[in-house]
Image 1 (spheres, one colour):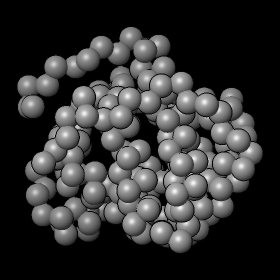
Image 2 (cartoon, one colour; image 1 turned 90 degrees about the horizontal axis):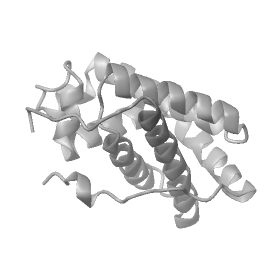
Image 3 (tube, helix red, strand yellow; image 1 turned 120 degrees about the vertical axis):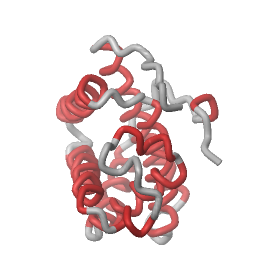
Amino acid sequence: MERKQGEVDHLERPSPLTDKERVMIQDSWAKVYQNCEEAGVAILVRLFVNFPSSKLYFSQFKDIEDTEELVHSSQLRKHAQRVMNAINTLVGNIDNSEKVASVLKLIGKGHALKHKVDPVYFKILSGVILEVLGEEYPEVMTPEVGAAWTKLFATVCAGIKAVYEEVGWTQQSSSTG
């Protein structure tokens, strides 16, 4: 059963990451990123299966019901690579708040203005990423590391939400939902 917007945790003004949290994120990401394509595909497939409304933003996936077909979709693999590369850029620049803000601005503007993606999906995707990484990399994603990632994703979501507000995003009404 798909969750509704009100059921998503509300993340606001997260506290800054500590040096220890930054290192834990970078170390754990280095291990995940070694298997970047498969991890990215697993994340997007889980997103589309658990939150089917997220597929509506992707004309090439919205009518695909078969999970195996999704897994083997070259378009899905390309988008998974873009998602993983964006996370890699954020993690690689975790100590550079200007670079992180610049990346979030790019992602936020593109998703708000071009793709018209409801910003709640960034929170949903963050939860899916944490879930998949926790299952696929249990030796890396300890509770302490997971808490650091949760804090990072809260920062990412807050940054993207700020970009959406900056560009004048207003809740889009959906005729499909």
